[in-house]
Image 1: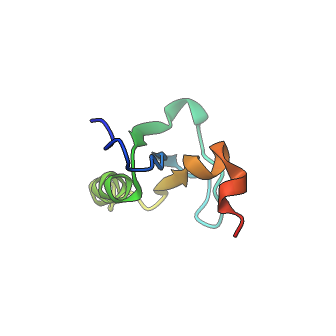
Image 2: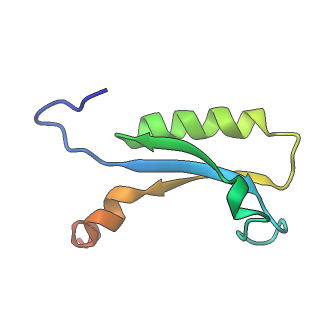
Length: 80
């Protein structure tokens, strides 16, 4: 999957796992994190996140997250 030549690449990471408690974002076991993947835009990352979240709907302490990697790679681009 390659980006269009004139389309800006905005990388997003989707990952998740079982949380230690429902009121925080500390994972119970880091060795069991589920790295879903890195996606070229928010729309595809959101789609992957939604699919994983729906698969684990009965596991209350399992959460998935979307991380905006492009903001970490170029923090000055988020200042406006």
